[in-house]
Image (cartoon, rainbow over all chains, first blue to last red; front, top):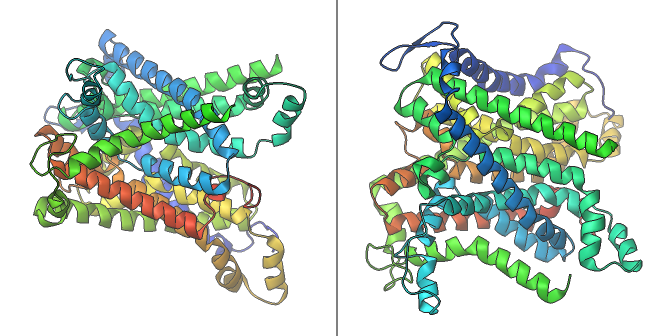
Length: 284
Length: 266
Protein backbone atom coordinates (compact mmCIF):
# COMPACT_ATOMS: atom_id res chain seq x y z
CA UNK A 1 0.00 0.00 0.00
CA UNK A 2 1.57 3.25 -1.09
CA UNK A 3 1.31 6.41 0.93
CA UNK A 4 -1.41 8.58 -0.55
CA UNK A 5 -2.77 12.00 0.28
CA UNK A 6 -6.14 11.80 2.06
CA UNK A 7 -8.90 11.61 -0.61
CA UNK A 8 -12.22 11.58 1.17
CA UNK A 9 -13.37 13.06 4.44
CA UNK A 10 -13.32 9.56 5.88
CA UNK A 11 -9.56 9.41 5.34
CA UNK A 12 -9.14 12.19 7.87
CA UNK A 13 -11.07 10.31 10.57
CA UNK A 14 -8.09 8.57 12.26
CA UNK A 15 -6.27 11.81 12.95
CA UNK A 16 -9.30 13.62 14.37
CA UNK A 17 -9.01 12.18 17.87
CA UNK A 18 -5.24 12.65 18.36
CA UNK A 19 -5.32 16.10 16.78
CA UNK A 20 -8.25 17.15 18.93
CA UNK A 21 -6.75 15.84 22.16
CA UNK A 22 -3.36 17.47 21.56
CA UNK A 23 -4.96 20.76 20.56
CA UNK A 24 -7.42 20.94 23.45
CA UNK A 25 -5.14 19.61 26.17
CA UNK A 26 -1.73 20.90 25.09
CA UNK A 27 -2.04 23.87 22.75
CA UNK A 28 -4.97 25.47 24.58
CA UNK A 29 -3.39 25.05 28.08
CA UNK A 30 -0.11 26.46 26.76
CA UNK A 31 -1.99 29.41 25.27
CA UNK A 32 -3.97 29.85 28.50
CA UNK A 33 -0.73 29.98 30.44
CA UNK A 34 0.70 32.67 28.15
CA UNK A 35 -2.55 34.66 28.45
CA UNK A 36 -2.61 34.34 32.25
CA UNK A 37 0.98 35.61 32.42
CA UNK A 38 -0.35 39.03 31.30
CA UNK A 39 -3.33 38.97 33.67
CA UNK A 40 -3.78 41.15 36.71
CA UNK A 41 -3.58 39.40 40.02
CA UNK A 42 -6.40 39.87 42.54
CA UNK A 43 -5.95 39.38 46.25
CA UNK A 44 -7.09 35.96 47.45
CA UNK A 45 -5.75 33.86 44.62
CA UNK A 46 -7.91 35.13 41.76
CA UNK A 47 -6.92 37.00 38.66
CA UNK A 48 -8.74 39.10 36.12
CA UNK A 49 -8.11 39.34 32.40
CA UNK A 50 -5.91 42.30 31.59
CA UNK A 51 -2.82 43.06 29.60
CA UNK A 52 -0.06 44.09 31.96
CA UNK A 53 3.68 43.53 32.01
CA UNK A 54 3.93 43.69 35.82
CA UNK A 55 4.47 39.96 36.18
CA UNK A 56 7.41 40.04 33.81
CA UNK A 57 8.81 43.23 35.30
CA UNK A 58 8.72 41.69 38.76
CA UNK A 59 11.26 38.96 38.21
CA UNK A 60 13.68 41.20 36.40
CA UNK A 61 15.09 41.72 39.86
CA UNK A 62 18.42 40.69 41.33
CA UNK A 63 16.77 37.87 43.31
CA UNK A 64 15.04 36.15 40.40
CA UNK A 65 18.00 36.85 38.15
CA UNK A 66 20.13 35.01 40.70
CA UNK A 67 17.72 32.05 40.78
CA UNK A 68 17.61 31.88 36.99
CA UNK A 69 21.40 32.09 36.82
CA UNK A 70 21.75 29.31 39.38
CA UNK A 71 19.19 27.10 37.56
CA UNK A 72 21.06 27.51 34.28
CA UNK A 73 24.46 26.90 35.88
CA UNK A 74 23.19 23.77 37.64
CA UNK A 75 21.62 22.42 34.44
CA UNK A 76 24.86 23.04 32.50
CA UNK A 77 26.92 21.30 35.21
CA UNK A 78 24.56 18.29 35.19
CA UNK A 79 24.63 18.09 31.38
CA UNK A 80 28.45 18.19 31.28
CA UNK A 81 28.89 15.60 34.05
CA UNK A 82 26.37 13.26 32.44
CA UNK A 83 27.84 13.42 28.96
CA UNK A 84 31.43 12.99 30.20
CA UNK A 85 30.37 9.93 32.23
CA UNK A 86 27.90 8.47 29.75
CA UNK A 87 29.67 8.86 26.40
CA UNK A 88 32.49 6.33 26.95
CA UNK A 89 30.07 4.11 28.88
CA UNK A 90 27.50 4.03 26.06
CA UNK A 91 30.22 3.56 23.44
CA UNK A 92 31.64 0.53 25.25
CA UNK A 93 28.13 -0.78 25.94
CA UNK A 94 27.22 -0.80 22.24
CA UNK A 95 30.34 -2.87 21.55
CA UNK A 96 29.26 -5.59 24.01
CA UNK A 97 27.22 -8.74 23.43
CA UNK A 98 23.53 -8.13 22.83
CA UNK A 99 22.59 -10.09 25.97
CA UNK A 100 24.81 -7.93 28.19
CA UNK A 101 23.39 -4.82 26.54
CA UNK A 102 19.85 -5.91 27.37
CA UNK A 103 20.69 -6.40 31.06
CA UNK A 104 22.25 -2.93 31.30
CA UNK A 105 19.39 -1.35 29.35
CA UNK A 106 16.78 -2.90 31.69
CA UNK A 107 18.75 -1.61 34.69
CA UNK A 108 19.02 1.88 33.17
CA UNK A 109 15.31 1.97 32.30
CA UNK A 110 14.43 0.93 35.85
CA UNK A 111 16.57 3.72 37.31
CA UNK A 112 15.15 6.15 34.73
CA UNK A 113 11.64 5.31 35.88
CA UNK A 114 12.46 6.10 39.51
CA UNK A 115 10.47 9.04 40.73
CA UNK A 116 12.39 12.21 41.54
CA UNK A 117 10.95 11.87 45.05
CA UNK A 118 12.45 8.42 45.44
CA UNK A 119 15.85 9.46 44.08
CA UNK A 120 15.82 12.36 46.53
CA UNK A 121 14.85 10.08 49.40
CA UNK A 122 17.52 7.50 48.48
CA UNK A 123 20.34 10.05 48.22
CA UNK A 124 19.31 11.94 51.33
CA UNK A 125 19.50 8.59 53.14
CA UNK A 126 22.91 7.89 51.58
CA UNK A 127 24.17 11.33 52.58
CA UNK A 128 22.63 11.22 56.05
CA UNK A 129 24.64 10.84 59.24
CA UNK A 130 22.69 7.85 60.57
CA UNK A 131 22.29 5.65 57.49
CA UNK A 132 24.76 7.13 55.04
CA UNK A 133 27.94 6.21 53.20
CA UNK A 134 30.10 7.92 55.81
CA UNK A 135 29.19 5.01 58.11
CA UNK A 136 30.79 2.65 55.62
CA UNK A 137 33.91 4.84 55.55
CA UNK A 138 33.99 4.79 59.36
CA UNK A 139 33.64 1.00 59.36
CA UNK A 140 36.55 0.81 56.94
CA UNK A 141 38.59 3.06 59.22
CA UNK A 142 38.87 5.81 56.62
CA UNK A 143 36.95 8.36 58.63
CA UNK A 144 36.76 9.37 62.28
CA UNK A 145 33.03 9.65 62.67
CA UNK A 146 29.95 9.67 60.48
CA UNK A 147 28.68 13.03 59.27
CA UNK A 148 25.90 14.44 57.15
CA UNK A 149 26.79 15.38 53.54
CA UNK A 150 23.44 17.01 52.84
CA UNK A 151 22.15 19.67 52.33
CA UNK A 152 24.84 20.85 49.96
CA UNK A 153 25.43 21.77 46.35
CA UNK A 154 27.35 18.56 45.67
CA UNK A 155 24.44 16.53 47.05
CA UNK A 156 22.06 18.27 44.63
CA UNK A 157 24.51 17.74 41.77
CA UNK A 158 24.96 14.03 42.60
CA UNK A 159 21.21 13.44 42.81
CA UNK A 160 20.60 15.19 39.51
CA UNK A 161 23.42 13.42 37.68
CA UNK A 162 21.96 10.16 39.01
CA UNK A 163 18.53 11.11 37.68
CA UNK A 164 19.79 12.24 34.28
CA UNK A 165 22.49 9.59 33.65
CA UNK A 166 20.19 6.79 32.33
CA UNK A 167 18.42 9.35 30.17
CA UNK A 168 21.77 10.49 28.73
CA UNK A 169 22.77 6.91 27.90
CA UNK A 170 19.44 6.24 26.18
CA UNK A 171 19.73 9.42 24.11
CA UNK A 172 23.30 8.56 23.04
CA UNK A 173 22.55 4.87 22.45
CA UNK A 174 20.95 5.00 18.95
CA UNK A 175 23.71 7.14 17.44
CA UNK A 176 26.51 5.11 19.01
CA UNK A 177 25.02 1.72 18.17
CA UNK A 178 24.74 2.79 14.53
CA UNK A 179 28.26 4.18 14.38
CA UNK A 180 30.22 2.48 11.65
CA UNK A 181 32.72 0.16 13.41
CA UNK A 182 35.07 0.30 10.42
CA UNK A 183 35.91 3.90 11.38
CA UNK A 184 37.67 2.91 14.59
CA UNK A 185 39.03 -0.27 13.01
CA UNK A 186 40.75 1.86 10.39
CA UNK A 187 42.26 4.07 13.07
CA UNK A 188 43.40 1.01 15.03
CA UNK A 189 44.96 -0.57 11.94
CA UNK A 190 46.90 2.63 11.41
CA UNK A 191 48.30 2.25 14.90
CA UNK A 192 46.10 4.44 17.11
CA UNK A 193 45.56 3.28 20.67
CA UNK A 194 41.92 2.53 21.61
CA UNK A 195 41.82 5.69 23.74
CA UNK A 196 43.27 7.77 20.92
CA UNK A 197 40.87 6.23 18.40
CA UNK A 198 37.98 7.12 20.70
CA UNK A 199 38.99 10.76 21.01
CA UNK A 200 40.20 11.34 17.45
CA UNK A 201 37.58 9.30 15.55
CA UNK A 202 34.49 8.57 17.64
CA UNK A 203 34.12 11.91 19.42
CA UNK A 204 34.52 14.13 16.30
CA UNK A 205 32.21 11.87 14.27
CA UNK A 206 29.57 12.32 16.96
CA UNK A 207 29.94 16.05 17.48
CA UNK A 208 26.35 16.81 16.52
CA UNK A 209 24.99 13.96 18.62
CA UNK A 210 26.97 15.17 21.62
CA UNK A 211 25.66 18.72 21.18
CA UNK A 212 22.08 17.45 20.89
CA UNK A 213 22.52 15.28 23.98
CA UNK A 214 23.96 18.18 25.99
CA UNK A 215 20.91 20.26 25.07
CA UNK A 216 18.45 17.51 25.96
CA UNK A 217 20.06 16.75 29.31
CA UNK A 218 20.27 20.48 29.98
CA UNK A 219 16.50 20.91 29.43
CA UNK A 220 15.79 17.76 31.45
CA UNK A 221 17.90 19.10 34.35
CA UNK A 222 16.31 22.53 34.10
CA UNK A 223 13.00 20.89 34.99
CA UNK A 224 14.32 19.40 38.21
CA UNK A 225 12.02 20.34 41.02
CA UNK A 226 12.25 18.04 44.03
CA UNK A 227 15.96 17.23 44.24
CA UNK A 228 17.07 20.81 44.95
CA UNK A 229 14.49 20.92 47.77
CA UNK A 230 15.35 17.51 49.20
CA UNK A 231 19.14 17.70 48.92
CA UNK A 232 19.94 21.41 48.91
CA UNK A 233 19.53 24.61 50.87
CA UNK A 234 17.10 27.35 49.80
CA UNK A 235 19.89 29.02 47.81
CA UNK A 236 20.04 25.84 45.69
CA UNK A 237 16.40 26.08 44.65
CA UNK A 238 15.71 26.31 40.96
CA UNK A 239 13.23 28.31 38.92
CA UNK A 240 10.94 25.25 38.79
CA UNK A 241 10.66 25.34 42.59
CA UNK A 242 9.80 29.05 42.57
CA UNK A 243 7.22 28.61 39.80
CA UNK A 244 5.44 25.87 41.76
CA UNK A 245 5.70 27.87 44.96
CA UNK A 246 4.05 30.89 43.34
CA UNK A 247 1.35 28.81 41.63
CA UNK A 248 0.38 26.57 44.56
CA UNK A 249 1.36 28.26 47.82
CA UNK A 250 1.31 31.97 46.98
CA UNK A 251 -1.69 31.51 44.64
CA UNK A 252 -0.11 33.96 42.23
CA UNK A 253 -0.84 32.27 38.92
CA UNK A 254 -0.03 35.27 36.68
CA UNK A 255 3.45 35.56 38.19
CA UNK A 256 4.04 31.79 38.01
CA UNK A 257 2.88 31.79 34.38
CA UNK A 258 5.16 34.71 33.51
CA UNK A 259 8.15 32.86 34.98
CA UNK A 260 7.19 29.70 33.08
CA UNK A 261 6.93 31.61 29.79
CA UNK A 262 10.29 33.22 30.50
CA UNK A 263 11.79 29.78 31.22
CA UNK A 264 10.50 28.48 27.87
CA UNK A 265 11.99 31.50 26.08
CA UNK A 266 15.37 31.13 27.77
CA UNK A 267 15.41 27.39 27.03
CA UNK A 268 14.52 27.87 23.37
CA UNK A 269 17.00 30.74 23.09
CA UNK A 270 19.86 28.67 24.46
CA UNK A 271 18.95 25.74 22.22
CA UNK A 272 18.91 28.06 19.18
CA UNK A 273 22.29 29.57 20.14
CA UNK A 274 23.85 26.13 20.54
CA UNK A 275 22.48 24.94 17.20
CA UNK A 276 23.79 28.07 15.44
CA UNK A 277 27.18 27.67 17.11
CA UNK A 278 27.21 24.01 16.00
CA UNK A 279 26.49 25.01 12.39
CA UNK A 280 29.29 27.60 12.41
CA UNK A 281 31.71 25.06 13.85
CA UNK A 282 30.78 22.68 11.06
CA UNK A 283 31.34 25.28 8.36
CA UNK A 284 34.75 26.21 9.73
CA UNK B 1 40.63 0.44 26.22
CA UNK B 2 42.09 -2.32 28.27
CA UNK B 3 39.77 -4.91 29.70
CA UNK B 4 40.71 -4.18 33.34
CA UNK B 5 40.07 -0.48 32.93
CA UNK B 6 36.76 -1.15 31.20
CA UNK B 7 35.62 -3.52 33.92
CA UNK B 8 36.49 -1.06 36.67
CA UNK B 9 34.66 1.69 34.81
CA UNK B 10 31.52 -0.42 34.36
CA UNK B 11 31.73 -1.59 37.97
CA UNK B 12 31.86 2.01 39.24
CA UNK B 13 28.95 3.08 37.06
CA UNK B 14 26.98 0.04 38.21
CA UNK B 15 27.84 0.81 41.83
CA UNK B 16 26.76 4.44 41.40
CA UNK B 17 23.43 3.27 39.96
CA UNK B 18 22.93 0.56 42.58
CA UNK B 19 24.15 2.32 45.73
CA UNK B 20 20.92 4.19 46.55
CA UNK B 21 18.94 1.01 45.93
CA UNK B 22 21.22 -1.09 48.16
CA UNK B 23 20.82 1.35 51.04
CA UNK B 24 17.08 1.74 50.51
CA UNK B 25 16.63 -2.05 50.31
CA UNK B 26 18.56 -2.36 53.58
CA UNK B 27 16.47 0.30 55.28
CA UNK B 28 13.25 -1.33 54.05
CA UNK B 29 13.84 -4.49 56.09
CA UNK B 30 14.71 -2.78 59.39
CA UNK B 31 12.96 -4.37 62.32
CA UNK B 32 12.30 -1.14 64.20
CA UNK B 33 10.87 2.07 62.82
CA UNK B 34 14.26 3.62 62.13
CA UNK B 35 16.29 4.38 59.07
CA UNK B 36 19.35 2.50 60.29
CA UNK B 37 21.86 1.17 57.82
CA UNK B 38 23.17 -1.50 57.95
CA UNK B 39 19.68 -2.73 58.96
CA UNK B 40 19.04 -3.75 62.54
CA UNK B 41 17.16 -7.01 62.66
CA UNK B 42 15.10 -8.24 59.76
CA UNK B 43 11.44 -7.72 59.09
CA UNK B 44 9.24 -7.54 56.02
CA UNK B 45 6.46 -5.81 57.92
CA UNK B 46 7.07 -2.50 56.09
CA UNK B 47 6.15 -4.22 52.85
CA UNK B 48 2.90 -5.40 54.48
CA UNK B 49 2.32 -1.85 55.65
CA UNK B 50 1.95 -0.65 52.03
CA UNK B 51 -1.11 -2.88 51.60
CA UNK B 52 -2.47 -2.86 55.17
CA UNK B 53 -2.23 0.83 56.07
CA UNK B 54 -5.28 2.46 54.41
CA UNK B 55 -3.35 5.63 53.53
CA UNK B 56 -0.52 3.84 51.74
CA UNK B 57 -2.97 1.44 50.12
CA UNK B 58 -5.18 4.19 48.72
CA UNK B 59 -2.09 5.98 47.37
CA UNK B 60 -1.00 2.73 45.71
CA UNK B 61 -4.46 2.18 44.19
CA UNK B 62 -4.58 5.83 43.00
CA UNK B 63 -1.16 5.55 41.33
CA UNK B 64 -1.84 2.23 39.63
CA UNK B 65 -5.29 3.30 38.39
CA UNK B 66 -3.89 6.58 37.09
CA UNK B 67 -1.01 4.80 35.33
CA UNK B 68 -3.25 2.12 33.75
CA UNK B 69 -5.79 4.63 32.41
CA UNK B 70 -3.41 7.38 31.32
CA UNK B 71 -1.10 4.95 29.49
CA UNK B 72 -4.15 3.54 27.65
CA UNK B 73 -5.26 7.03 26.67
CA UNK B 74 -1.72 7.91 25.56
CA UNK B 75 -1.68 4.86 23.27
CA UNK B 76 -5.18 5.73 21.99
CA UNK B 77 -3.86 9.15 20.98
CA UNK B 78 -0.54 7.94 19.59
CA UNK B 79 -1.68 4.91 17.55
CA UNK B 80 -4.06 6.61 15.06
CA UNK B 81 -1.61 9.52 14.73
CA UNK B 82 1.39 7.29 14.00
CA UNK B 83 -0.72 5.17 11.61
CA UNK B 84 -1.99 8.23 9.76
CA UNK B 85 1.53 9.63 9.36
CA UNK B 86 2.69 6.28 7.97
CA UNK B 87 -0.30 5.71 5.66
CA UNK B 88 -0.95 9.18 4.28
CA UNK B 89 1.08 11.87 2.59
CA UNK B 90 0.05 14.88 4.64
CA UNK B 91 2.98 17.13 5.59
CA UNK B 92 0.73 19.32 7.76
CA UNK B 93 0.06 16.30 9.99
CA UNK B 94 3.69 16.43 11.17
CA UNK B 95 2.63 19.42 13.28
CA UNK B 96 0.71 16.99 15.48
CA UNK B 97 3.72 14.73 15.82
CA UNK B 98 5.68 17.77 16.96
CA UNK B 99 2.90 18.60 19.45
CA UNK B 100 3.02 15.02 20.70
CA UNK B 101 6.74 15.28 21.42
CA UNK B 102 6.68 18.81 22.85
CA UNK B 103 5.21 18.17 26.34
CA UNK B 104 7.99 15.70 27.10
CA UNK B 105 10.73 17.95 25.73
CA UNK B 106 9.93 21.07 27.74
CA UNK B 107 10.75 21.28 31.46
CA UNK B 108 7.82 19.36 33.08
CA UNK B 109 6.87 22.33 35.26
CA UNK B 110 5.80 24.16 32.07
CA UNK B 111 3.37 21.43 30.97
CA UNK B 112 2.18 21.04 34.56
CA UNK B 113 1.52 24.77 34.98
CA UNK B 114 -0.19 24.99 31.57
CA UNK B 115 -2.54 22.18 32.54
CA UNK B 116 -3.13 23.69 35.98
CA UNK B 117 -4.17 27.06 34.51
CA UNK B 118 -6.31 25.25 31.94
CA UNK B 119 -8.18 23.04 34.46
CA UNK B 120 -8.64 25.99 36.79
CA UNK B 121 -10.01 28.14 33.95
CA UNK B 122 -12.53 25.55 32.73
CA UNK B 123 -13.49 24.74 36.31
CA UNK B 124 -12.40 21.10 36.60
CA UNK B 125 -9.38 21.69 38.87
CA UNK B 126 -8.92 18.80 41.29
CA UNK B 127 -11.09 16.21 39.49
CA UNK B 128 -9.32 12.83 39.43
CA UNK B 129 -9.94 12.32 35.70
CA UNK B 130 -8.04 15.49 34.86
CA UNK B 131 -4.90 13.73 36.10
CA UNK B 132 -5.56 10.88 33.64
CA UNK B 133 -5.83 13.31 30.72
CA UNK B 134 -2.83 15.34 31.95
CA UNK B 135 -0.60 12.26 32.25
CA UNK B 136 -1.78 10.94 28.87
CA UNK B 137 -0.77 14.22 27.20
CA UNK B 138 2.50 14.43 29.15
CA UNK B 139 3.53 10.86 28.27
CA UNK B 140 2.02 10.55 24.77
CA UNK B 141 5.57 11.05 23.45
CA UNK B 142 6.63 7.55 24.53
CA UNK B 143 4.06 5.44 22.60
CA UNK B 144 4.33 7.95 19.74
CA UNK B 145 8.07 7.36 19.46
CA UNK B 146 7.91 3.55 19.76
CA UNK B 147 4.95 3.36 17.33
CA UNK B 148 6.57 5.65 14.73
CA UNK B 149 9.66 3.43 14.96
CA UNK B 150 7.44 0.35 14.64
CA UNK B 151 5.64 1.60 11.54
CA UNK B 152 8.91 2.37 9.73
CA UNK B 153 9.93 -1.25 10.28
CA UNK B 154 6.81 -2.63 8.53
CA UNK B 155 7.51 -3.88 5.03
CA UNK B 156 5.09 -2.00 2.78
CA UNK B 157 5.03 -4.81 0.21
CA UNK B 158 3.23 -7.02 2.76
CA UNK B 159 0.49 -4.46 3.02
CA UNK B 160 0.55 -3.99 -0.76
CA UNK B 161 0.01 -7.74 -1.24
CA UNK B 162 -2.98 -7.74 1.09
CA UNK B 163 -4.62 -4.83 -0.68
CA UNK B 164 -4.02 -6.35 -4.16
CA UNK B 165 -5.87 -9.41 -2.90
CA UNK B 166 -8.84 -7.14 -2.27
CA UNK B 167 -8.56 -6.26 1.39
CA UNK B 168 -9.79 -2.79 2.24
CA UNK B 169 -7.95 -0.39 4.53
CA UNK B 170 -9.75 -1.59 7.63
CA UNK B 171 -9.10 -5.29 6.94
CA UNK B 172 -5.45 -4.59 6.12
CA UNK B 173 -5.06 -2.75 9.41
CA UNK B 174 -6.70 -5.51 11.41
CA UNK B 175 -5.05 -8.51 9.75
CA UNK B 176 -1.61 -7.24 8.71
CA UNK B 177 -0.66 -3.98 10.39
CA UNK B 178 -2.01 -4.62 13.87
CA UNK B 179 -0.20 -7.94 14.50
CA UNK B 180 3.07 -6.39 13.28
CA UNK B 181 2.70 -3.26 15.39
CA UNK B 182 1.46 -5.01 18.54
CA UNK B 183 4.89 -5.34 20.26
CA UNK B 184 5.42 -1.60 19.80
CA UNK B 185 1.96 -0.86 21.25
CA UNK B 186 2.80 -3.00 24.28
CA UNK B 187 6.19 -1.39 24.83
CA UNK B 188 4.81 2.13 24.33
CA UNK B 189 2.13 1.32 26.89
CA UNK B 190 4.71 -0.14 29.29
CA UNK B 191 6.94 2.96 29.08
CA UNK B 192 4.01 5.33 29.67
CA UNK B 193 2.67 3.14 32.50
CA UNK B 194 5.94 2.94 34.44
CA UNK B 195 6.75 6.64 34.07
CA UNK B 196 3.21 7.66 35.05
CA UNK B 197 3.44 5.48 38.15
CA UNK B 198 6.43 7.54 39.30
CA UNK B 199 5.52 10.99 38.06
CA UNK B 200 5.26 13.74 40.65
CA UNK B 201 5.01 17.32 39.40
CA UNK B 202 2.15 17.02 36.86
CA UNK B 203 0.05 14.90 39.25
CA UNK B 204 0.81 17.29 42.10
CA UNK B 205 -0.11 20.41 40.15
CA UNK B 206 -3.35 18.97 38.75
CA UNK B 207 -4.85 16.85 41.56
CA UNK B 208 -2.31 17.14 44.40
CA UNK B 209 -4.83 18.43 46.91
CA UNK B 210 -7.62 15.97 46.19
CA UNK B 211 -5.80 12.77 45.27
CA UNK B 212 -2.59 11.42 46.75
CA UNK B 213 -0.56 9.27 44.38
CA UNK B 214 2.40 7.34 45.78
CA UNK B 215 5.10 9.87 44.80
CA UNK B 216 2.98 12.64 46.37
CA UNK B 217 2.39 10.49 49.44
CA UNK B 218 6.14 9.83 49.79
CA UNK B 219 6.99 13.51 49.42
CA UNK B 220 4.37 14.51 51.99
CA UNK B 221 5.61 11.79 54.34
CA UNK B 222 9.20 13.09 53.96
CA UNK B 223 8.19 16.36 55.60
CA UNK B 224 7.07 14.62 58.77
CA UNK B 225 10.06 12.34 59.06
CA UNK B 226 11.18 9.15 57.46
CA UNK B 227 9.46 5.79 57.78
CA UNK B 228 10.79 2.49 56.42
CA UNK B 229 7.53 2.11 54.45
CA UNK B 230 8.90 4.71 52.03
CA UNK B 231 11.89 2.48 51.45
CA UNK B 232 9.67 -0.58 50.86
CA UNK B 233 7.54 1.32 48.34
CA UNK B 234 10.72 2.41 46.56
CA UNK B 235 11.95 -1.17 46.24
CA UNK B 236 8.50 -2.34 45.14
CA UNK B 237 8.51 0.31 42.40
CA UNK B 238 11.99 -0.48 41.12
CA UNK B 239 11.13 -4.19 41.11
CA UNK B 240 7.92 -3.48 39.15
CA UNK B 241 9.81 -1.39 36.61
CA UNK B 242 12.56 -4.01 36.28
CA UNK B 243 10.00 -6.80 35.75
CA UNK B 244 8.05 -4.80 33.15
CA UNK B 245 11.16 -3.82 31.18
CA UNK B 246 12.53 -7.38 31.40
CA UNK B 247 9.24 -8.64 29.94
CA UNK B 248 9.49 -6.05 27.16
CA UNK B 249 13.05 -7.25 26.52
CA UNK B 250 11.98 -10.92 26.68
CA UNK B 251 9.16 -10.58 24.16
CA UNK B 252 10.50 -7.73 22.08
CA UNK B 253 13.87 -6.54 20.86
CA UNK B 254 14.86 -3.98 23.48
CA UNK B 255 17.99 -2.57 21.79
CA UNK B 256 15.95 -2.18 18.59
CA UNK B 257 13.13 -0.45 20.45
CA UNK B 258 15.74 1.94 21.80
CA UNK B 259 17.13 2.71 18.37
CA UNK B 260 19.59 -0.04 17.38
CA UNK B 261 19.15 -1.10 13.79
CA UNK B 262 18.66 -4.86 13.67
CA UNK B 263 18.75 -7.83 15.95
CA UNK B 264 21.61 -9.58 14.18
CA UNK B 265 25.19 -8.76 14.98
CA UNK B 266 26.75 -8.96 18.38
